[in-house]
Length: 240
Image (tube, rainbow, N blue to C red; front, top):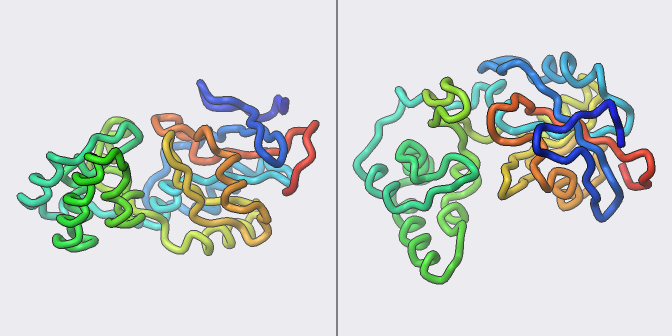
């Protein structure tokens, strides 16, 4: 195994995929603030250890913070409807869910009250038949991917929510052009792994990219590892 790459605690360094074995090293950064430049972060933390053929997995939250793609609580009005509907929502162990009234309020503001009332009713019916995720299928990815409005990891995240990155393909293209790093932009937790964007030169399919991060090697707590460097194992032959 590659001794230059170190995994997060309780995470595996190597993963076996359908197209070969890869090692994944978690790259720790400082606490990234709103408005920083993500290419500067790649230059500072990734380039010193990056090798030709590596793939960088980038957490979507960091890109959104750099893009200032956030909404502050102080700019929202928490309604009775949001408080009411959030009481019936299931709690997710994988991050903030619409059982948080502020996230429910974001859903109402983003989608409209009628659509969210329907999503809530449909989700309730879905529970009776053992179907999960019905609410988010109706509400859409922006609501499902919303982060923030909680202080479990960092106190600062209690004051605002973090939306999905804008133009994820363009983000990956810019990183590749300005730093030479091949990357994929991901929204991952211990339950789902979504590929939001990829560098133009990354030929792996979305399904193959998901295999590389199947166990969520970046973690979802206070690791401060928004970057995961993925490297083909020396004893494995696979596409790049």
